[in-house]
Length: 443
Image (tube, rainbow, N blue to C red; front, side, top):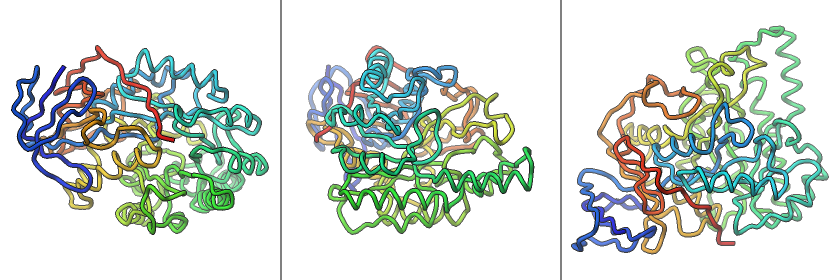
């Protein structure tokens, strides 16, 4: 099968240029100013921009065990509609991916149902070091450690266990950093003041900047001590930025950091309007934190943009503060949100591609993805930067049926998404005849 994309404005490796792209089977066969062969399908992309498929390094697709919220099928479909062609899914499902057998069960589900490409992280706990060290670095994205409260047995708060994992694991370790002791102390203070009726506006005070910094600085200290390859998820504070530098090329960094869409878009000013819909861990914090994170992204202290897509039902999100789960759905709207920042001249299109496509591939050493290059898998996205649309119930694809962006008008629309050369999404319609592939890693 050959697909020829004509007249596209390619955005790749810091440049924008007009070119044709020939796809043959799963692979980018040729990139040239003029390709004249008779392909089985020709797409005229005049006026459209061709980006590498987005790689989301942090999602919660809820399967197995929490499928009333989401499934790998429903959320991968929403991701593809949002231009995300590969995702990395977290281990806190039910059962939790704390053994190699349970981890492989998730891969089996994805092989049958995921429209996008996929990998799943191996989970760490206080007592599964032996299983963690069995993880195959060529076939699994990373080891995930919750250095902050999580469900069940996934909070790793034993310093000796952390030392063991950081010193012995040859793989990239990805961490959620919030200090549980600090959070509990802040919770007691909030309850003394408000009782059980703590307002959502207290969330960034309970899960405070201090809680984040205390945990993330410990992770960085451990990584430096043991020369561990560390990736810190979802930075949310200005204070934490000082832990990271921009002195080395990304491929040479041993310690990298990510920022999520919601920490770039929302601030504590939005709690009054959005309420518990924007309750995330770590919390959305001050406007000054949001602005500092955006600048650190531009300055290359923060390396990756992700979603931390974590859907819950509206019923669950409509509860009182202590009973509302943290997290929200984002994969369908992450790229359009970043392209809105492009329209506002806050970031360049080239920088968005760098942070959402190139850098996840470099950070995790993903084989043959994340770039528009000959010989790479044809994970591609065509976008129209001037095609406004409004987020509403009718066009939301998440199983949970809601979005924190509901009512927002985005100016950029995704027209086509190619997954391994297959047009999985085109102008609002899906072709589900082919599933995504398991990601592999050059380690």
